[in-house]
Every structure is written in structure tokens, then in C-alpha cells.
Amino acid sequence: MADQLISDRVADLVEVIVCGIVDNVDAVSLDVTDSEGATLIEISCDKEDVGKVIGRSGHSIKSIRTLARALGQRLGIRVDVEVLD
Image 1 (cartoon, rainbow, N blue to C red):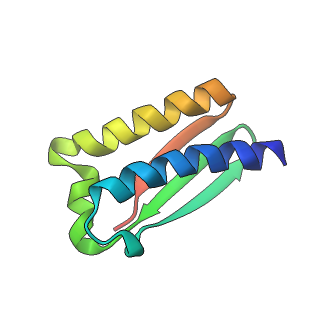
Image 2: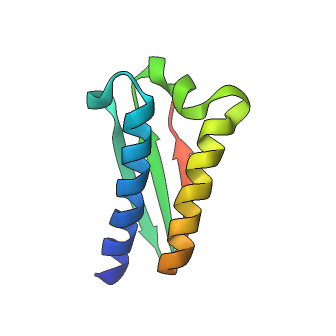
Image 3: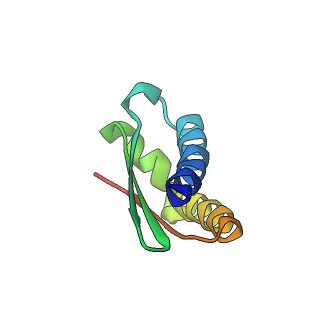
């Protein structure tokens, strides 16, 4: 139960960041998969916004991953973030 709450906190951070980047906020959804000591957050968004989330040369998604992993580390879980096409 505690792991679920921790992963939700990280997912909330990712959602706030992604919603600030995209044009179509209503199309943003996150799928959070928890396993033992790790969390996978998959971002789905409008096809036109995928490039914005990834960013030029992947800089935006790298920054999102860095922030999510830093929060996850503080909370004691390993976090990975992926963008679905």
C-alpha cells in the first residue's frame, strides 16, 4: 500500500510536468506499473504532442526522467519513464 502511494506521488509530478508542455491536456494519461522496488510510468498523449514531450534531441524526456528518478530515489523506489507513441 505504501509503495502505491509513493508511485502516485512520482506519477503526479510527471503528470504536472507533461501537462505543462502539451497543447492537448485532456489527451494526457499515465499508466503506472509497480513491481518490487520499481515503478514504470508510461505517458500517453496526443500524437501531435509526442514530439513536445520528447523534445529536441530527447532533452525534455531526459529532464522528466531525471526529476522522476530523483523523487523516486528520495522516496526509496527506482523509477523509469517512457513515452508511448
